Image (cartoon, rainbow, N blue to C red):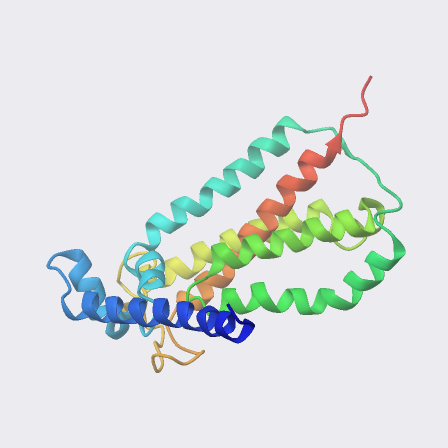
Length: 237
């Protein structure tokens, strides 16, 4: 088979899958079942201003459940920190080779774009705070592996990560209390007065982008803290 034929097949296959997925999505939306699922599919955009139905379910209709899921990371960090209390981080002076360090130094800004995009576009496309937060945590680990813990800890200290996680969790809770202050449910969105904007725009979705940001910071700081706690070595004899 000729190379151009292979290239044609390589282009045609994902295109076919994309069209099939689009047709399937349209069929599901137009023939939405009754009950909660049907309501979510038919009314999520009007209710929240976010065009990502999954994100609307997670951070609007069932936002309280998401708060419970995010609390699992906070509990994990607290448990690991308690188990490793009194231990000191293992110091690695060198890190990787100067070539790798120089390359990562130039590419670090580019690496930040992907998780930040995922966090801030969670109400518009697949992604959100959990996925973006994990990607940010990978960057924290990458910095420690490439530059060594001695150098990395000058900027990304365990106390900074713990503080960021606590602050983001508090921010999530404070956003939820706005609904109560307005006489509605905890973590209410449009009903609490958050402007939903024009669906499809970056500034839309009401409180959903703010909750995604809080979750992104919390997940990144929490997983980064777990890595640093596990990296710790007990110096006691």
